Length: 199
Image 1 (tube, rainbow, N blue to C red):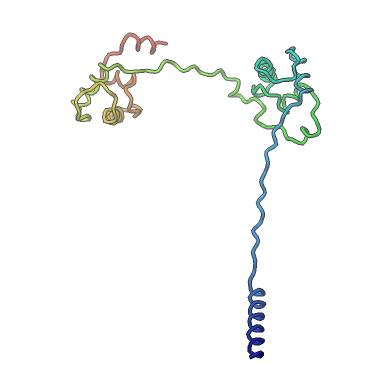
Image 2 (image 1 turned 180 degrees about the vertical axis):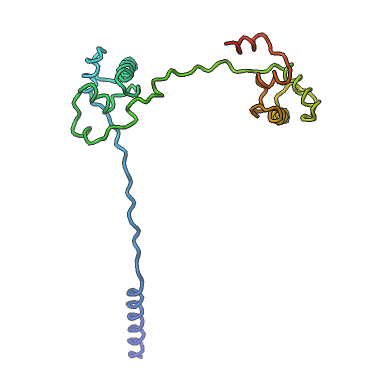
């Protein structure tokens, strides 16, 4: 009996040893996470910039000072962000801290040709009147593009019919009742619509 127990224990021990030798463990490579370092101006740098831009020397980034920084940036080929980034401090010849020197200049700090273009003002939104929508729905019914009764509402079936009309007439298929579509349909514009179109 004693021999049997020793035999069983030896078999188990050898099995475990063999299993351990044949089993391979795979370790996955660690993925590196890149930490984004944020550039921050010190209180002393803010005060120096405020002195240079003739703003109250508070050492804080308030709205008035941000506007002054934006003007300076616009005049010096920088993107007008209103923040004291590395490119702005360097342009102002304000010394950087050792830590700030390790943070590279953000390429987005510099102005592009598009930044200097004046923003185009959007004109008034064209809106068709209820009477114009009813007239358009009647015309679309006559052309077998619209099956419902005219309601004066730009619902989904009206928009689908308008798209079909626009495609058939070489117009941009927007599904909206815009000025070009009304004119193509022979529906008169209101005086307000004509005035907005002139502007």
